Image (cartoon, rainbow, N blue to C red; front, top):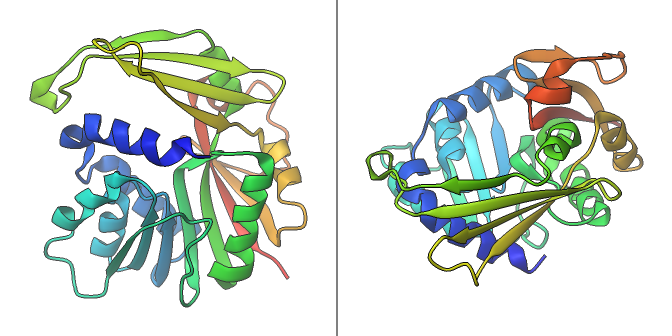
Length: 258
């Protein structure tokens, strides 16, 4: 996974002026954490990006530890101005390697699970269960939805600059989906420099595949949040358009068992 730091640092530099700020998406995540995690307590956020959700959680009264491997996290300092001392601790590090003191009521991983192989995901889930969650703790994990990513196979997008909105770069994006490995590849480059593309590789999981991945980790899939709807992971939902066509990721609620 050597590409991870470079990909998210580079794309982070493209979009920081627009995206390194707390928005409605971050406040929605706070609501999701209150509803499906804990109304208060200690939160570990993995892959925290610019730190916007970590800041929103700290503003809401949580004690937050944020871990991000890329340079995006360097923007969190300015966002954290005015927070109570000790409410946010930031680490620029690899969450597969970092050693953290203490345990947490909630571990969250927004918009990132699926980087690497199945073995990598299981290794991370084992760390969540064995090292980071307190008894009775909850993990909230965004999972890439293969049904929608498959529909994007072959898409070729041209993103033109919009300086007023903070987007300064002229970019191209091509998305491909491998139906055998259920993996999406998302390739970007600056239009003026097509010889230097960068690619992220994202393993996608159906809810049934995710439940199998969790076997032996100590975590159980207890609910799915798809858009604004909360679903049981065992209740059939044939022709459920939100999962089939409308949402490229869903939130998995994982509870520590045993």
